[in-house]
Length: 556
Image (tube, rainbow, N blue to C red; front, side, top):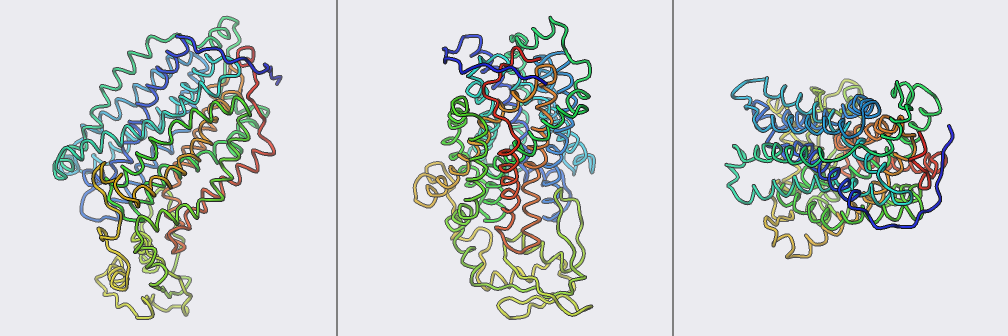
């Protein structure tokens, strides 16, 4: 496969048409990400509405499964809509994906609770999440390809970097809407019906997005290819059934998007998960902290996209992966010490030992949250992990019952205690904080968040994580677009992107939690993004080509 190149182009002012293309594509994609992220941001309310009973573990598993379901099907959406995009065009395909996303999100806002329609409620919710994942699988590739094919040579990194802001802006918009509602109504009203409003608003966003995108023309590269009759008749077969193209897709995945994905999800989603689930910071405060860090960090997507036009996509991507991998442990340890100092102190002073026959302890790996654990050894370890308590697993004699001690004192676990709640109580009596402890950072208002050194320090640490996100994510759209010829570009770039981000990235929070539960250390989940980021840096350094000077218009 021959690749045409173009030398560095002089930076010409952006035309009115190019500005319209970027605004329309970015606006629609922002709204799609807004829709997709609502399920994660409102996970607790969704679980309370659609899952029966008061079992917090069951609700937590449902939340993880629902969030993961949307990520799991994204590669399939990439295949379906990527093929359509290469056959019929970019514009009409991402109009379809946007409509599908908006309708699925609106339905979640209308969906009756479990108390009204029983198990149909969680089932329909999961179906809506699957539809959202399919839609998002087709949306991103279309928007990135469409903008890149309008961009002049030498400016694609800058032009497509605006698309790269949309995921973060969409998350920020969802957090802003949710926080505004939380602060404008009582907690009881928000829990009862207020959480539905962000989902219902999506129908307004959908109407605006369709209107603005209908005014766009098809991309010039696709129009030229169509006029010449050089469109692919079988994009899937050509992109992944022929080794030269399939090899590029594999390099794009393992040498690009896998590492980009874990750095991105670690800096935004796992950071929020770590604050709320591990450090027990209340949801309002955690969302505000993340929102401020995103607000400060978002312009750097544009900077690194622009910078990649100067020095290349590859060095920025690899540097971001390596720097993140080298600094994750100290960054998250400092976040923990600032946000919940009593918890970190307890990990050093409170010793929890679980002594069990190794044969009675299984693996706790449960990336999609569907396993049910019944053996005491497994149940106790998951309970301690859920409560952010360090423990050591010690081998006991064959056939011996599980024994637990806190600072050397045995814990009596009644037969009626099926979850190990007495272990948690003993650990809290020895020094572990309870949820809502006064030592946990807690500033419920915007002014409060900016009023003391602890919250400002947290915003600074979270900003560093977001900065890593902008390094790896800012140039990735231009890189992926430039790896594939026009005839299979939509299909070719979409699959590695969504496998990387939907699977390697999307499963990061539950996978990291499974590692934490298995090891008894709240920081051990960071090994997952570190290992993937280092793998991507090595593979990318060896195999990933530099693409910034490729001429897309004359490469079919």
